[in-house]
Length: 360
Image (cartoon, rainbow, N blue to C red):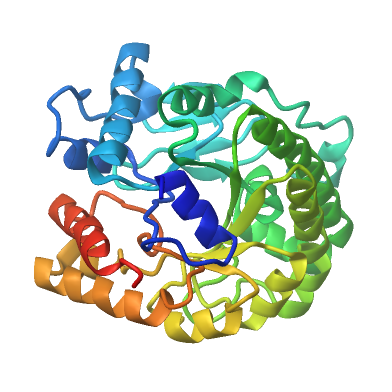
């Protein structure tokens, strides 16, 4: 099987020739540290917002080198919208959200343009800009037809709390300003329905809807709040992707058990990443069998950062035994490959998956 066919087969809940491998994300440091095992043609380490165009191209070539050298089955692309550098550690995106940069993770929203319901008057996300698909177009030139194209965007929860300048504000809105919460979800949902359709027309095959809904012990909102403020919008987004012929999965760290059946009811084709600290992948696979693909689960909190090569290999073997039978499983880390993960451990994870993930 070609890598693309392998990953799409698993997303369709069928059994490919071996367990597919894919990763939701690498950041600048992890790209450089892993890619240097295969090439020396890499940019200096800095946040991508501070890179020149030539350095950004080298960084993307580094991702492509990782994908080709390790034979990953899918490629993850993000919208590449405008970013205004405000200071060494602050940037502002095209819709007015200010992010604090980190040397060790993704930018974090610290201020949003919607301070109150009054700010919604005249507010619009506008229409999606085809220029934001340049990463997807670049990847298609290299991998079209060979590797699955995954397009990653926020969903109505993640972008809504970004617009509000903090998750705590949106969660308070669920109790105190429900009309504001619904209005934000409506704006975000309409925008991403249009954006996803445009991305699929441009070559994306799978949509990854990011945005955590839970922490280790429970969901961030009550199941009743999920049902009211998010489920209807998730279902609209899912139905829109399916209408365009694409697949879509939901990403969320944490304990999703309280709302897992509601996520399935929205029609998501997969659930990622089944965080091992709070969800047993064997139990999740059995619960999702025949209904949704299972993605992820290789521990990026302890095993990939601090484990031995032998521990990584054993984790991969155990995960394959629990999640792979019958197909419908795609292996990745339990979130993303962050700078704390040892490059050697990530490479060992991939090699072990190739070794032990062959279906008989």
